Length: 400
Image 1: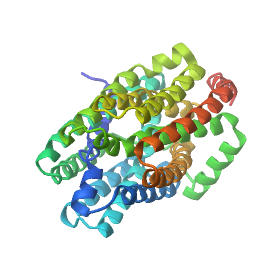
Image 2: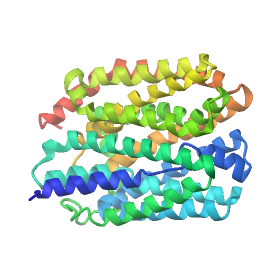
Image 3: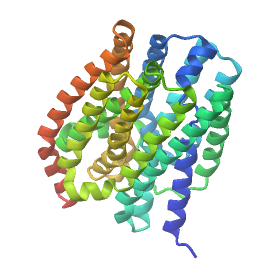
C-alpha cells in the first residue's frame, strides 16, 4: 500500500500536469493576430498589461492562501482559466482579450506560491521535508513536460483551426480544478489569528531585514524577465526566420523537454556546484542564447530557442527552494508571492520596452539589445551571489 507521502506526491504531480496544460501557448500570438486582428506591438502591450495585473494580484493572493486556503486558491485559479479561454473562443474581440488576459493573470496569481508552499508544508507535516528539493525539481519537470506535450498538441490542433487549442485548455483547466480538491488536508500551523494584511506586512519586513531574501528576489526577477523574453519573442522570431506554424509547437515542446531534463537534476546540480555555480549558468544561458538568436536569420535558428530550457530548468525549482529555506511556514506563500510581485513588475516593464523595440527596430535588434542587458545584470548577480550563499547556509544551520 502506498504511504501518505506517496499519495500526496502523486496527486500534486498530477495537478501540476493538468494545471499547466495550456494548449494555446505556442500559438496565442497567431490567434490574437488572425482571430482578433491585433498587431504584434498591440499583443505585447496586452501582455504587458496582463503581467502588471498578475504582479498586483500576486501578493494579496499569496497572503490569502497563507491565511485561508492554498488549495482553494488553486481551485479558483483553474476556474479563471476555464472562463478566460472560453470567453476568447466565444467573443474574439479586443475588449474580451483584455478580460481574458485579466482572468489568466488572476489564475496565475492564485497559483503563484500556493502550490510550492502547500508542497513544502505538506511534506514537513509528514516528517519528510527532506524530500522537498527533489519533489520541487520533479514537480517543475512535470510542469515542463506537460507544457511541452500540450505545446505539440496545441500546434497540431492550431494547424487545423486556431480555436481548438483554447477548447483543449478549457478541458485541462477544469480537470486541474477537480484534482486540486484531492490534494489532502492543509497544515495551518502558525496561521491562527493572522490577517492577510498582517502577513503582507510581515513578509515585507522580513525581506527588508534579510539580504539573502532580497538577493533571491532579485534572482527571481532576472530569471523571470530573461525567460519571458524568449516566450514573448519566440513566435515572432520563428515566423520571421521562416519556420512553419505546425512546427511552432514542436519547438515549444523541445524547449520544455530540455527544461524538464534539467529540472529533474536541478537539486543535484545545486548540491554539486552550489548557488554560485547555478547562478552563473542561469546568467550565461540567456545572454548567449538570445544573443545568438539576434544574429541568426535562417530556420535553423529555431534550435537556439532551446537555450531557454537550460535557464528554466534551473530557476523554476531552485529559486523556490532557495526562498523556502529562508522563510518560516506562516509566511511561505506570501513571500513567494512577494518574490513573484517584484519579478512580474520587472517583466511588465521589460515587455513594454521590447514592444517598443520590435515596433521601431524589429525582432532581431531587440533580441540583441536584451542579450546585452541580460549579460550586465547577470554578471552583477553572480558577483553578489557569495553573500546570498552565506545567508542560505546560515538558514540551513538554523541561525536565521
